[in-house]
Length: 84
Image (tube, rainbow, N blue to C red; front, top):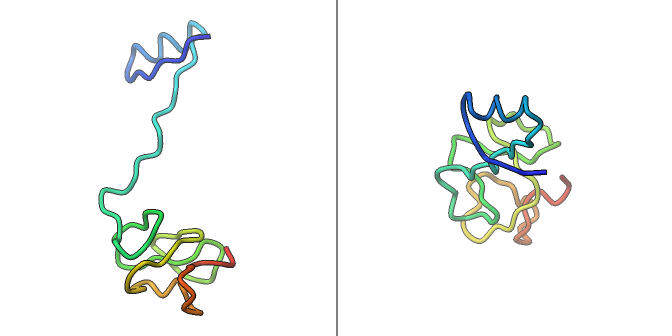
């Protein structure tokens, strides 16, 4: 089975012919906050996924390597969103 990454009507024609169309990889946000690894977007607020925050963005466990602007590392041990 062939895998192609195509867009537009050509992709639709290939899909109809039984060719598997690869989905593009999820893009990283254009700008990552320098205090967190892996990438946490620079935005007005980021909360832990599964927590009680109201977003607009959510993240899972992250390493905090600078000022914890989003208050994700409540116990100060360098790991944010430990319970998510």
